Amino acid sequence: MELGRVCQKWQEMFSAQGSRTGMGLRPILDEVGVPYSTAYFWIGRYKDEHKPPNVPTEPKEISLEEALDKLVRRIVMQPHGYMAAKFAKYAFQHPSEMKLVERAVCEIYRQIGEICKTKQ
Image (cartoon, rainbow, N blue to C red; front, side):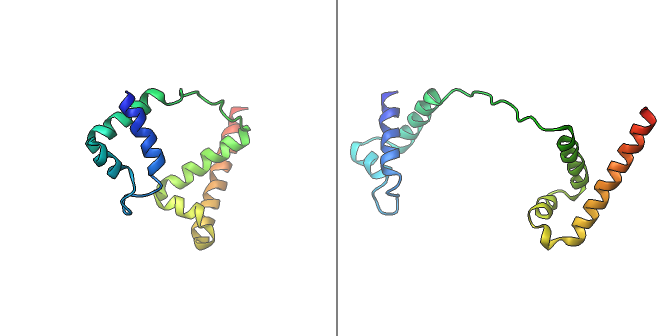
């Protein structure tokens, strides 16, 4: 485990130098006679044993309206597949698609309203 600690420190110190300049971690390993695969194996083992514990974070509390809006938009965007991300990120480039999305959102909300009326 000591080899992992030392190699990990070397990796931190010399990674900024880069392998293209010949001043990275590999020349150091060559100099001391440690094979790359052995060094990276022990670095991985050292990091696994010394990583911080996975502490769950408190979930962010959102309103019912926000949760419903996210769910409705997810339902509307689902048929668009990978293009949905482009629509959201570059909405100004997809005005006709975004109009269709807004109409679909309104239609789902209308249907939710009708369902609520029948439940009363």
